[in-house]
View 1: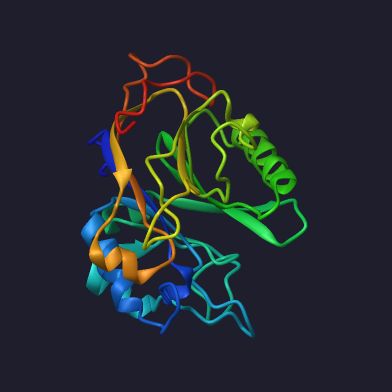
View 2: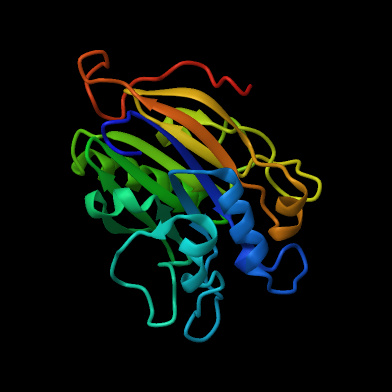
Length: 252
């Protein structure tokens, strides 16, 4: 998304440590799926193994070669890790010099955090929310409060929300338009809408969906989600910030 072009494809994908549903570790499948989606920005979850020094499950050295994307630069990862709390963001190389990433610690009964990617006029917050609804509510409330301190950018929250219910647990996001493009878990026979995209005013949703392909059903326990978005000119958009809703989800 060169910032002269107000449209972008955003995606989110939980890699399940590149093990598919049952193993073995086969990151080439996940890299192929990421390439197929063709996103400008993609939030990734579970990019590292959990034990020991948390080594990368998605090999950093092969990302650009196989996908055309590069990892966003931020501090706080382990020496062998790709992500922070298992998360990273990939983006087009042309965006890298404009990107700034901030780590956002989150409350809850298990260690969780979010990544805030700031581009001119747009903030994308990548999340992997907790397993307990009370924790998810507290985490979303914290993120909405922090977003207000990040500035008046258009705002997107995306990732694995770990929330299957359409009407519970997401109350903090009521000022935003929450997209659940379709069932994304479990990948072989998707039934639950765990993965979501929430957008503020100033962002038009052109299209959205679940990336459902044969290789995607094998590569992880989640299917990726995606949305094609258009950033409205400030002169045409309401006041910036998280308040307000955009049009209905065209995928529903």
